[in-house]
Image 1 (tube, rainbow over the protein chains, first blue to last red):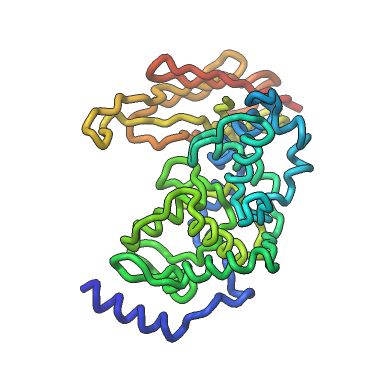
Image 2: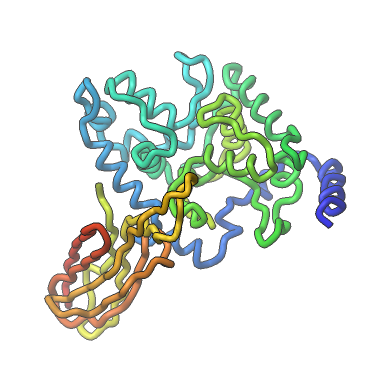
Length: 255
Length: 106
């Protein structure tokens, strides 16, 4: 029963392929139930704020051989980190490629604090990322589209449009062409990463965009890229570029 | 690390019904799950939540393994006098967290 249905979808997808027009873009927030939206909107009900509080403590705490805290260089995050998450992934001259906010935090830890890098999806890294991202809530996403980032944006777009996995699906087939329709019991969202790191009720915890992308890849029965893999970062860069102009909601809540 | 978020109105009128919200960071491990190698993961949950208002208990909840991680509890009480609301969560492995919030009655 499943295969004829999917075949039909694929045909429609091929006919419709293309980016969602700006006026029709919608955050995943708008596809959520009233209750879940209320949870995100109220900072005392949003469980993501627990990580933000942890992140604030980490921001102020000294760490590493240099004995410095994030606050010693960056000062008050409410001013210095405003808009930072809306610009990531951003180009890093030292690595000659774009890096995610998590990678930026770890680079700062290793180079400036002389502390060991935090593990992907560890409570500490998620907390710091959530705290930094929280300062950009409401800021429109703005990803640089210039000579340095363009090759990586193109690579990300290619990954987005490439069919992969045993189901032979591309991200674009569902999220560009079939958004708003049902996939089993769920509405297919447009996949705009406006709220990461976010609290997913299914995870019962906070998670990064990379965790979400790896989930999605498993869902189409493709082999996931490793955390921090260039393919994932390029895809994140393209997704943020695709959502340019949309306000950041971090830390968001999703079902 | 910070663990609880409390929302109590700072001011209220005498006799007014006020809504109180309490969110706490906790894994709420059920005790029914196993690791990929088959070892049982021991239960680790909050068992009891109690709220007192100037020493008088106004709300109590027993928590069980089916409750999701990071429990969020919202309830209401009547604002009777200025003072302190105290919140206490207790649970497995000696878990105990106390938070308080002040309220002023006009």
